[in-house]
Image 1 (cartoon, one colour):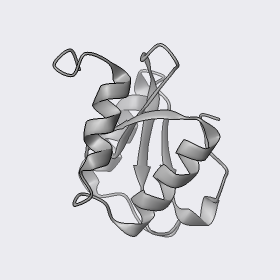
Image 2 (cartoon, helix red, strand yellow):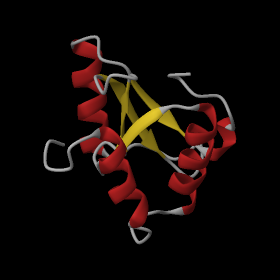
Image 3 (cartoon, one colour):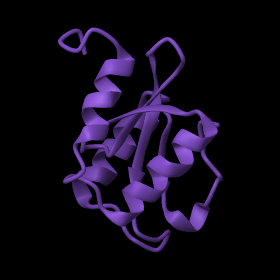
Length: 102
């Protein structure tokens, strides 16, 4: 992140990239932005959730529906997070404005 100088600048750079979104991730970002949730879109897991100081609060994997399964690598990461008491959530547009880090 130091390359960009600030969380705000980093998010501006990421927002300029429209080619990496799927509809579920677009919906997540729309709602998270509306609720004032800070995040970085990294790809695996889909999002790193940050507090107002830029410190990591947890991780979110976005799926098209709640019935969508996590891939085996995502399940391993979920178990890793659980083992070390790191918040990890699966989110889908079905969840609407319900955000685990709100």
